[in-house]
Image (cartoon, rainbow, N blue to C red; front, side):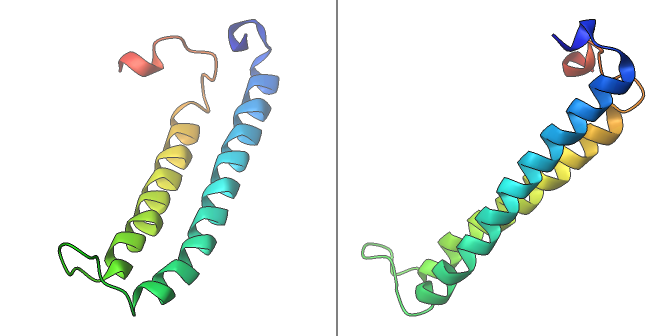
Length: 88
């Protein structure tokens, strides 16, 4: 669909998609904070690992994914309609 759009419209669409993705990831990061607070007092039943370390993965993974979304937006800014971006 994006290959048939004008470049300016494709850029705007990519920007809205990136804003939506990063917005969702911010919600995940904010939602993971109370879990980490609760996890300070819990340990996993089998391995006795503090649960806050497991919940920290939500925050770290979301931050990493947000960085990837922003980098992809920057990479595709000049040619948002390129079909070969996934192969590079």
